[in-house]
Image 1 (cartoon, rainbow over the protein chains, first blue to last red):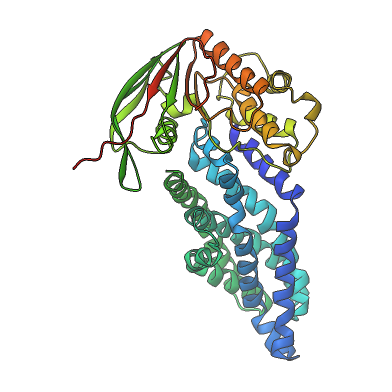
Image 2 (tube, rainbow over the protein chains, first blue to last red):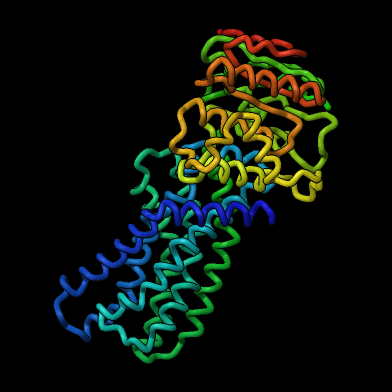
Length: 222
Length: 212
């Protein structure tokens, strides 16, 4: 097994063993979405119209909470320095860590979305489309987020800075994710066009994110 | 094999810490870096490990692998141990053994055996199922140093390897370094203690000469 998969496996093992981070993200997701109907009142038509947007924005915020985890722990205990001297290029280290973040955070959040959709009167028939678009869109969150996580490594309490850096990068994913879900839930067409754009954005992020993140990590290790 | 630093200039935060330093370490030799706090020992080791880009000059590993950078042929043990507190001692070492194994290296000794040998060598065997977070500072340090044995690399860069170690473990480190140089390896170590290393040269990093 190559170093890449060894690292992915270890990060997943750590995510499971230090379960708090996944639990926090899922709990945060639940609470933010649950607050919406309370704040907006029981207007079911309104809720189902804004459901896609609320689900995506809350997902972004929940994922944002767990982004620092990609590099922070390894930076603090010195493991990142050792990884920088490994045969595996730092770009692939960043890719492996982003992939592990996606599997341990992006997928659980995507799978939880339909259950939260019920709180927002989202048609249950659109659940497959909801999960599909979120699974297709969340890699962009992890791989672009890794750039911000790497840039803010040395910034103590860098959480807010991280949000400022990466949230603008998520705008295209947000737009096409919401369009795709609305296409199914509200019966308009254009689902596949938006879905294809989401996949394209994720694939682009998968390529560019690790390169930028690795450059940022090199800078932080100086 | 020969580790060569050629007119190296290193700066931290815009200040020159190491000024036009040249040295060469032959295979089978150890270089002990000494000098007061702030003399640039850690800076030099971090530059050798490839983290810090030299302002001027270069670092070359003559006779090393052509398709790997000098840093990729080095073991770096810094102030931090790089071990995960929620993984057990054995899991930590197994990860590094798998992760640091050079692709295509069929040296015969499989990672689990290497890890077993490293655990025995550092008296960590009784602790192998304990999460690393429960270890004492000295035990953690031994675990960090055990990484040197789980993957084969010709150059060892050790930054204060004996911090928080007892006398016996410090002796163990010295024995390991001696064994590594005896086998033709290269060691660069920054330390305040006289470890009693064989085949060792000393490089005293002086106080910085500030240009007027």
